[in-house]
Length: 189
Image 1: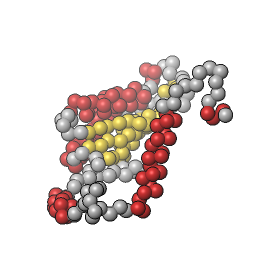
Image 2: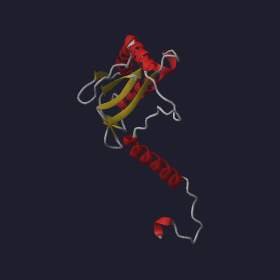
Image 3: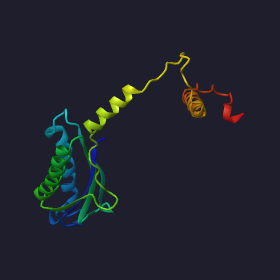
Image 4: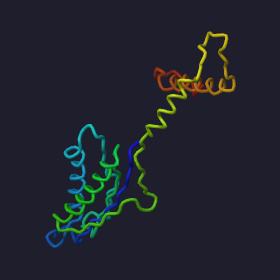
């Protein structure tokens, strides 16, 4: 039900040999600081009653042990239950990425919602439609199970039986006791 957005940032520095880091501008260090700073957006800036989340799930940079790369790519997702919080969070993510990279002498570019990464707006129930639903639902007359007016929809019985059988089988499989040593399990028989 929350709004969801995606971001991808490229943090660029100056690569070089790890034995002489003073001749590089390390984008891995900068990207690490960006990730840590992004984690503080929710814990230190968001109202705890206004549920939000920022998660970095992508961190790609370098390909060898002894070379500092020219750039690092990070990416992640952010979510909020209000449009205003979503817009503010997006703004702060961009600000943190660019500013933290700059503190480490790196440049950063950030892209929101590219390719398959598309934002989804927050789901907000329409008050008038909800009120209409409640009015219609109150008018529906449902006879209790032991009433002579109760009508069973027999078309749903196979689905209910399959669901209950699946629940029982899954529970038994997940909670069966371990076989004592030397005895054979049901699968081995």
